[in-house]
Amino acid sequence: MNRFCYCIAASFFLLSVVWSPGQEPAAPRPAVAAVPPEQGRWKIIVTDAKGEKAARTDDRTPKVVEIEIWRSGSRARMVQTISNGATVESWIADDYLLSRFPAFPDIYVTRLNDRATPLDDGMSDFRDAFPGTTWLDPKYLAGTETKDGKLCEHYVNPEADCEAWIAADSKLPVAWRKGSRVFTYRFLPPENLSMPEPFLGELNKYLKADSQ
Image 1 (spheres, rainbow, N blue to C red):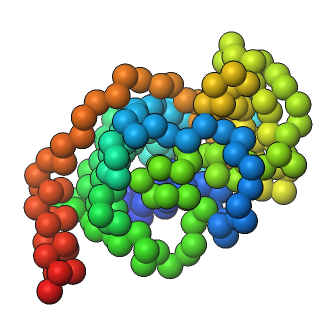
Image 2 (image 1 turned 90 degrees about the vertical axis):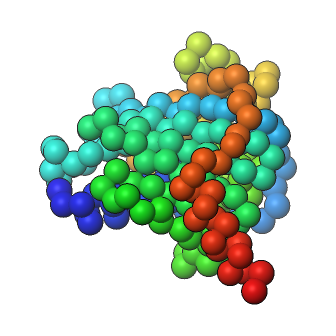
């Protein structure tokens, strides 16, 4: 896979997974899952659904196997680990998404409000929803079952081919499935966020241009 294709593939994964399922924003609904805390950190382990095989056009195609997210106030950091060992680092701050891909040294900057396709992401700094939970609605509640050793409320949306498991006691997400991929949560101790260079320098360039 050439560098351009790799970068594009990583970009689409970032947008389609972190902000899944990528539908038009839904109308306000009763809260069925907890919202991320002001200071939070969690890891999402990505695997193939049990008994199913992920579609592949090329066995050498890199796949995201882990996503770690830090949230501190209105800023967030994401690090995606690829199956080949490479990482994609992204920051969300001041309505901008800044990403650095292993194939390119430059920082790729996108204004969140300028995205071509509306995404069901709640607040893009993860203030309103954990990834994979924005589609949840009481009408999708299928019952309760144990997932990853926890008693969970099980939500199923057959039309979107996704399901989610929410801890019955804490309302924190335990896992969700989209298509043939399962995303399992692991919550970690929070850490303070400090945006490093060159992300900070690139962000300041855009903020300066906005103020002129």
